[in-house]
Figure 1: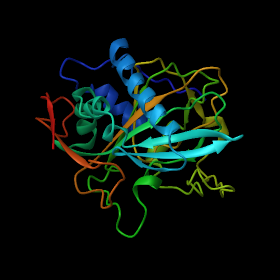
Figure 2: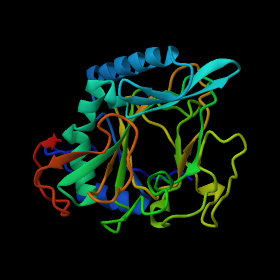
Figure 3: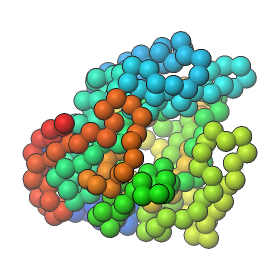
Length: 287
């Protein structure tokens, strides 16, 4: 089923329109086209090139220069599954994570003038590298039990943003999602540790294959979705990379565990962003 997503640009204050907020709540995901220009995307790609060069010198998963590299192997070749807190070793990526084009709408959706950045994550999806992210909700990665997460704002307390660094086509391992799944609350998709050799895969009763929407995007587009939106992406079978840069923001006090990477969990203050979607906003600062 194809969702009729409205691809609207941000206004000059970087605020979402009422229609975009309504779509986020109803569909669970919004797309903001061409939010970053070609020059900015090229700078981010250079940072990814540097991360890829760093990974090539590593033999196993580990922390290097402030970033956590999650590595694997396929057919004897190294696979970069993801780089956690990529901004720890790449200052430009860290600055992108504090860019008001991301932080203002994230703060608006969270209903807070202060947000905590938990994710600065690089996904490479090199051709035929076998990297997949099966069906899941991001709440499964935020809430690990034992008091690690509290839904402070009553709406999930987390917003994920995804910047496409390459065009996302039907064969490049694009994002798939279920429109409306943001209203499900937390459901059971089984194992969500993508590194398990034989993961237990489950489908909640709300899940129907006919509802799956495959999302394409252009380099520079930004996707935003909440912690309960059911989504997945599978192997890139195209001849080109499908890189995305993920930044994730939490409502203050929601997260109660330490994320890997130097500076992960930093607080970003965004001026004048109450819960009212019509409010104006100022620039973001971070600590």
